[in-house]
Length: 265
Length: 192
Image 1 (cartoon, rainbow over the protein chains, first blue to last red):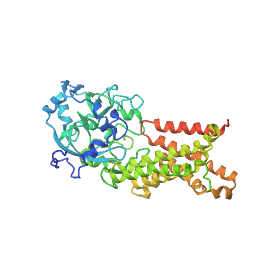
Image 2: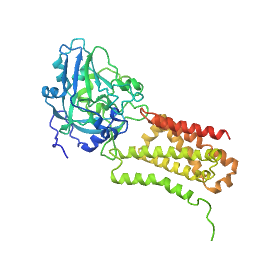
Image 3: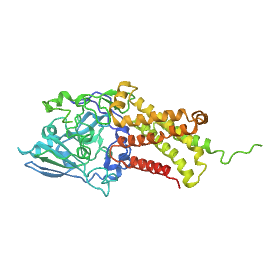
Image 4: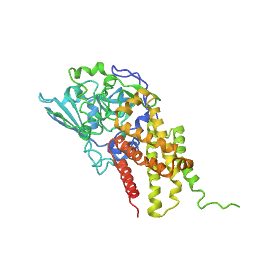
């Protein structure tokens, strides 16, 4: 069953053709639900997404603990069509339904000491078939610099192609940072904590020489095992060149002015 | 009427059976069964098949010597050739996945140990395929032929290393493959 038709309308929406809903919901990296690309869709039932509580705390004046449905009443979601580039070398065009993370952060009022935002995903090893100790250090955590988190492109998504997000896509609440490799866009978020110091991030802990804190899409910096110069757009037959910051350089390159992006990869 | 040798179906059976996965792969490719990223999926499958068949071919002599399964020696060549067939298919799919862009492929082979190891393993299999015919043993002499075909051990080792480097997080598969090869190597060094 097709969702409603999504057409680009906002300033950040890409005009490129959307990836098929089937591919977006059956080809996923979400290790909590299994390591294979098809596992998250197959094991989706293991992730119970309601009721779901999110905590926003740390360096903020008004910490909150609230239900995910309250969150979407506070911030009515809108369509955002973004490119998504996986660090493995494939990409999609995905019509998210969500709201700017900045709106939520401003509402809880960061203190003057807040510099970073830490995100924590669900931890339920007894329920999630992929949450095994030898795979990764659970729970999955990610982080952004506060200015990255406040950027209008940075999204908290609750839906895809006009429909409620499915577990394999990170239901009920996930981050979408379209200029960074997909692993930064943490799924099934239960906690958002503002911090003074850079938070630990799961993949940078697991393989620090392969995955850095920034993980900005960068065709000039290869992964140790493969080039990042090109990508396989799902649904297409050939490879296409990868763009700096995944095509969002105009919007976000200024965040990294003066930084050596080879060292801060 | 000429009497058939015992288990006459053995060699053709193994050869045909070994091609069944390729048939399934072809069917999946035609019917969309390979999912959203079909070339990558087929590359993974053929790579795993190649290493599995190479390991089985290395198990033949230990099975004959230790378990007295004399028939095992008769399927060794078919298993080795099937392994080389899937390895070539694996490489071809990788090349296709790179849009046959030779500059990019050369960069991978020259600069990335993950690709170098797999490519080296494939190269080592080439002389083995070329001397797999029954006449080759006679032409080269048994000793020289045997020494040449010991190249299968470094080839298998490099293939396992390639598999290890290719896996992002869960190394169960490469570990099992490496352990199996190690045991088979030891079984060849010792005799019962």
